[in-house]
Image (cartoon, rainbow, N blue to C red; front, side):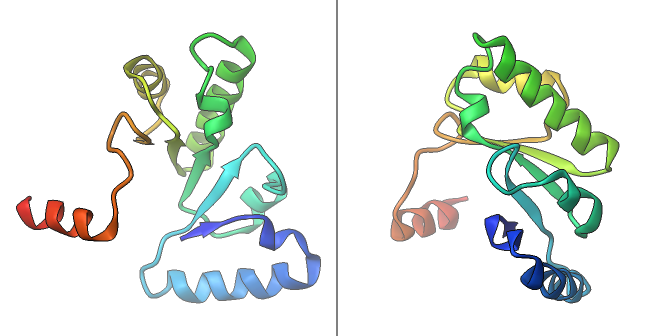
Length: 130
């Protein structure tokens, strides 16, 4: 499951943490969505029972040509590794992006390079074939 900006409100944050812990006890895993953007505060990484960080596609798009995006992606990967979290990059469209991320320790990628978006029926058919 993804956790996003909804946790920004302090009164809902404590309730959300309790609910997340309860769901984790039943085997669900959680990821901070859009790491490095919006409300994904570093305080969440410390307090929430997370399993994964997700690198926002806005940092992936130009990471092979923009040094700032490369540093941000590497920093999120290092943070995830240091906290014992898996890291997933969103919006991976080229082999160069994928290679950069994997070489730096990102465990998973999602985007058009991996698979184009599919309608539910097409996805179900694909899954039946494999």
